[in-house]
Amino acid sequence: MFYDTHAHFHHKLLKNKTERIVSQLKETKVSKIIEVPISFDSNFEIRDMLADYGELFSYAAGVHPNQIHWEEILDKTYEQKLRNVIETKPTIAIGETGLDFYRCEDLEQQKRQEVWFRKQIEFAIQYKLPLIIHVRQAHHQVISILQEYQHALSKQISGVIHCFVGDIELALQYEALGFKIGIGGRVSHTDEMAQILRETVKQLSLESIVLETDAPYLKPEGCKGKVNSPLNLPVICDVIAELKNVSRDEVAKVTLRNAKEVFGWQG
Image 1 (cartoon, rainbow, N blue to C red):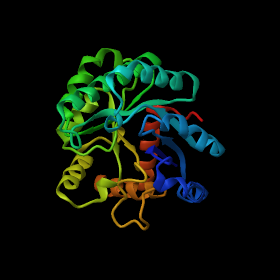
Image 2: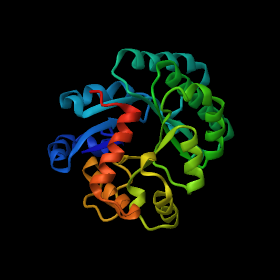
Image 3: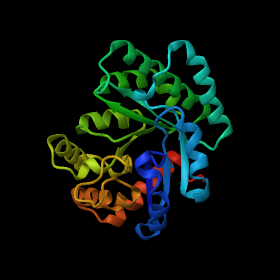
Image 4: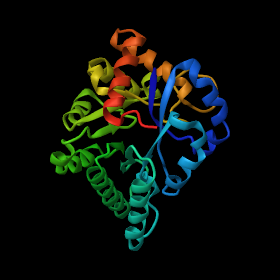
């Protein structure tokens, strides 16, 4: 049984494929998917869009760092709207939030990302929900901010570092802060960064790993079709099993337990 801890079925590349993908999930033993909003507006769309699929989907609430486009004067309005979603709609995680300086070199916009990263950490603490963290070219800043909140976050499983790519030392820093490491399709690739990730997976405890697809992004190497989906989760599992020299069943069992530990199994 597999738990996809990160997907985006509201994305235009998956919207029209949802029914077909869901109909095939039983064959691949994918039994739970966390639908993660990207834009602010998607917080209001995802639950209605996927309501017919019952307990297959659970939902995060948050805003991606690259999607913070409104002016600072509107922060209180957006903060209250997001709080309303968390309080009134079924929500099992906060995110994806974090910092992405790969696509954003503007210092003022980087500061805006930090403001909203902190807001969402504080939501996670207040509502006792795990975080789903996106980070690109900002690991030092993300770790520094998380350390500020370490005492409050240590009272719960802190969450997942989504789509992790980095060496074992970096992974262990996040592990020390209470985070699981999200491993997706990149682990099957052969570029230089993917090779670093593969070495990290070899060394990292299986108890620190959760599976994710980031569908429709980051399709595993060699998979058919133009877009990624949770149907490819067993492929990711098999790569991890090979790297760690254990069985697919062992990876599936332990990563499922890890995901349940962080997110539970709510409908």
